[in-house]
Length: 79
Image (tube, rainbow, N blue to C red; front, top):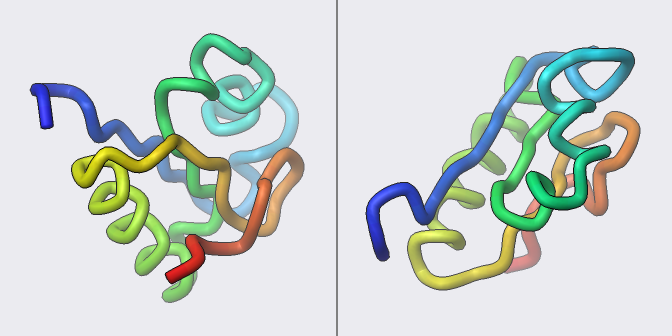
């Protein structure tokens, strides 16, 4: 994968609301279409999802919005 091709923005509980980084990335379609976001990195499933999201992007997968907060498309990646 090209340098910078696997960008994942991960935040803790609350990062998908207000003006937090994950929330802002998800509301900007230009950004959301190029990076993955994870809004629950403070729990085990969020940490696993973060690693899976990086791996997916490196392998040519599409960016996704993961977690339990506003704007998440799913809790984690399908295997």
